Structure formats: C-alpha cells, structure tokens
Amino acid sequence: MTIKISVAAARGVEFIDSQVQLSGWVRTRRDSKAGFSFVELNDGTSLGNIQIIVPQSLPDYETIIKSITPGSSILAEGVLKASPAKGQNTEVEATSIKLIGGSDAAVYPLQKKGHSLEFLRSIAHLRVRTNTFGAVARIRNTVSYSIHRFFQDNGFIYVHTPIITASDCEGAGQMFRVTTIDANNPPRDADGKIDYSKDFFGKSSYLTVSGQLNVETYCIGLGKVYTFGPTFRAENSNTSRHAAEFWMIEPEIAFCELPENMDWAERFLKRLISDVLTERREDIEFFNKTDSTLIDTLNHVVASNFVRLTYTDAVSILEKCGRKFDYQVSWGIDLQSEHERYLTEEHFKSPVILYDYPRTIKPFYMRLNSDGRTVRAMDVLVPKVGEIIGGSEREYRLDVLEERMREQKLEIEAYNWYADLRRYGTAPHSGFGLGLERALMFITGIANIRDVLPFPRTPGNCDY
Image 1 (cartoon, one colour):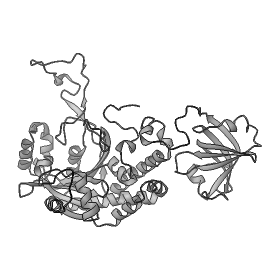
Image 2: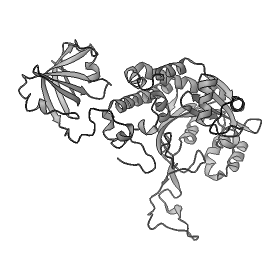
Image 3: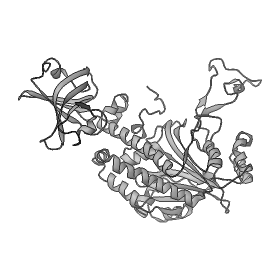
Image 4: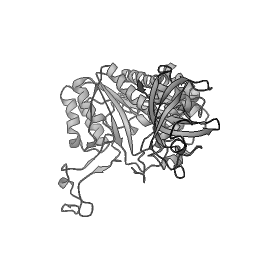
C-alpha cells in the first residue's frame, strides 16, 4: 500500500521501508554519471528537503525526469529508505515521477543562489518558496496558534471586533476612510464640504486602528476576552518598523489592575517564545545562523523575571548613564527604541516593564494616577527590539474619562457608547496589545516588518 505523506514526515523515521507518495516543488535536480538523478523536493512543511533518487531505468527518464527544473511541481512515488548520506536521515528511491507543472528555468526568478530580501519583496508571490520566507510562514502559523492556545487555556473568550469603525481608538487621526461616495462627484453640504451623511453608514467611517474599545464592551460582561485580527494605520512612514496593515492581539481582563496586567503580559510573551523554540526548532536554528545570539536571547527572555520600573525611574537612569543618545532624554518624552534597548541590553540585561507614563503622551482611555501627571500605562521592553507590548489599566471613572476626552479634543458624544460602560456597572479592567509582526521580528531576528508580512502594505505598495 502506498502512503501519502508530507516532506516533514518523510524526513522522520516513522515510514522507513514504506511505499510512499510525495508531492511538492523541486528545489534542485542534478544528474549522476552513475545512471540516476538526485531531486531535492520541498512542500513547505519543513525547512529541509527530501532527496529523491531517480534511476535511469524509469521509462520516462530521458524525456521527463531530465527536463525537470527548479520550481517545477511533481508527484513522486517510491520506497522511503534510511539514508547513508551525511546530513539527512532518509531518502526516497523513486519508482515513478510525474511532472505536474513545469517551470521555465531561463526565467524562473529563484535561481540556486542567494537573493536579497529587497529583491524577494518584488516577487512576494514566489518568495515563500525560499528557506527564509517558508520559515517565517511556519513560525507565523505557530505563533498564531500559540496565541489562541494561551488564551483558551486561561479561560478567555475570543471576540471578533469590527474592521470598519467610526471610532479612533488612538486619537491620532491616521485612519483609512471607508466610503462609497463617488470621489469625482461627491455630495456637498451648504458650506461646500463633502456631506458624509449621504455615505453608506450615514457618517464618516474608517478601517480600525485597534479592536480595543470594542472588545472592552465584551470584557464588561464576559470577564476575560481577547481579539486577534487585522488593523490599519494610514501613517505615511517608510521605516522598517511600520506597515499600513498588520495584525494585533488585544486581551482585556475585568477586575484586573495594572500589576496583574503586567503578569498576564509576561506570561503571554514567554508562552509564545517557548512554543516556537519547542515546535519550530529547525526554523529557529536557521535564523540563528544569521544572528548567532538569537536562540540565546529568546531563551534568556523565557528564563528571566521581567524587571518592573516606573517611567520616571527609567528617565533618571537614562539621564545619568553617561551615554550620548540620538534623542535627548527628558521627563515627558516618548522613549525611543535606543533608550529602551539600553535599559534591556546594557543596564538591566533583562526584559523590562515600564509603567506610569506621562498623561500627555498616552491615549484618553488610560487610568489617571492620583498624582495627576501620570497614567497607569505599561510597556514591555525586550532586547534588540525595545517595546513589544503596550497596555494599561483603563479609566473606569466616568468623570475622569470625559475630562481626558476633552483634554484630547475628542467628541464626547461619539464615544457615548464607550462611556456607558462606566455608567452601568463600571469595573476596573486592564488590557494590552501585541503586534504580531513586531513579535515575529523579535523571534526571527528579521529587521524589516515587510519581511514578516505575507503581503506587506506600505506607502506606494499595494500589489496582489
């Protein structure tokens, strides 16, 4: 009996001496003078390939086998054998090879050589066939599954929050408008301005920048909830850390104050990293070849007790450290990654959770401290990246919430539904957000967010 298996399974020992069938894409083919060919096959289930030994005795050896080129898709049958060759456990002795889809070697972009990440971004539809992007995709899958496992194991309920919204969670105004209005002939009001009351939703609407405000409504009713989905920022930035579309994980916990929120964030991050180290070891070791400190850094984060430090104390350390930073440090600034990395990599040599930030640099929904100057915000900082998680205890006092809205020049009526959560059974609650791509950059050591997104959306780039 022929067993259909994956390349990942074929590289193990479970099916040795079995008749197997594999399908995938050819990485290389080389012909031996001894009368057979070696075909390296990959189907995306593992970093490594399976070697298929194709004897010259097969009837279509000259017409089909020797025409197989990199990028071609094939279906192979044969006996899986323990391999005497160094560096591989198994190989397949082929009894038949069927060419499914050919690939013109003269124009196939992925030749047997190194390709820059910049070049591979220009062929995003093909780059997943490379070792780097195949490994990123598998790690992304593992992290995504780990996110759900963590929250489900801890009694959280998964909530789908809307992608189209009328609320700006961050108050920054960098939102993509959603409209059915004809841009060439828009309706206008008496003042000549575009009349969005004639739009599909009867008001201005946008792609969400965060599911937090929405998921808070379910928190005040279900207790522990989380949302995990795409978010959007119309920020005209071409840095290696910014994208217009990315994925966010945002848990929200009722009857939870800031110290407990920090505990959840620390446990969550350690779980994601631990799962990747355990389940995607081969892929992580591949990235460790580029950055030899990667695995040590990840293990260090898992083993560390995160240092907890107020923003004020962090500023004092930075001001006294004697280091010349590109951005001068003073109380009230939003700390830059160079400041955050100094704290984690040099001063504490450990992940750090900063908390109690100035109210002037944080959104309206963060709980105001009794000093009137700071809010109960927290950021989790890790080596090499800096901030990886941001969160806060939420402002659950109605009068203070409305004061903060006025302070940030928000239309209070537009957030009346949000204020209702404080009118009817208000409760302390906290939450945080983790950008999936930021986490993947840290876990893989990849420096550009464009290379951990399957199809990056950045200014001037919306292909596919």
